[in-house]
Length: 348
Image (cartoon, rainbow, N blue to C red; front, side):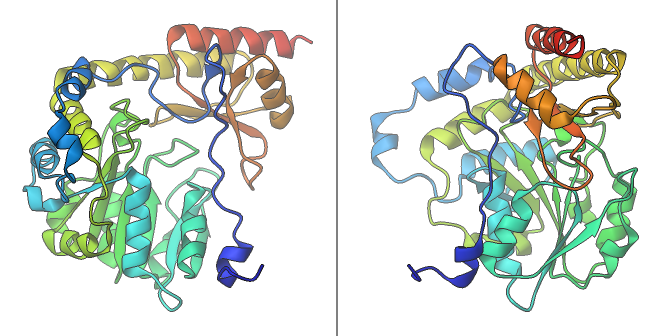
């Protein structure tokens, strides 16, 4: 048609994980938390008034900013609310990048990054991880306006220690955005770096550890000067009243949050051992998923055979990933169904 900008015409677009319509499936392909959100979330949503729905929402989500600030031991003006963590990524690229100001990130990583770079029509500098998924030294020398490090990394589950990312922040002339969507399943996080570095943004998601993937809520942590600039770029009312209410109730219930995280970690450990017993090469993961290398079988064939049994995992036809399956940590019952199906397939 010729109506679209050239970069939009050639864009492939982000491909989300398959969303089956059936409910009687084992869905381990999109890293949702297998446990329900805090009961406080349902109570809070039930108490939303018609007047709250009639009016526009709080444009900054101040009640959530206050709650998140307390959890992260910063002031509320260090927090920006977003429509999922993905919106913060989009806002950051719009704020910092253009045709002359590229973004850089190590690969393989979250496949949305190059899609957003293409939409912003900015250069994307992809620096390969080594075989151990260590942070590449070259990342500090790209000259990019924005550098993104997903930590724990998706889809590998690998974790770069805080000192290494602090060193990277100190070397960069541009902004370092640390995508911590999965960090609650790790032992450490980088939130404290915002107090030491003026160029660091921390991304957090409420989808994984708080079981709010259907609500679409995330937030960023950074120095107030960065938050003020990002606020200029976001939509006027980017998070709705229901989402603000639900996310605030979830982040305040620290006991439920801790219990859920520990259950996922326990299942992650169990699933890792079960997969290894079947011959898969499974590195330790710091996320709510594992990356299993298929040593004696085709990963894509295993993916297809599992799907025929209504068990969905994730396959990526990308370099360094073609022989692997990313498997979300499910409940005991879900994980057992997966392992049972794999045993059946591998014995064929």
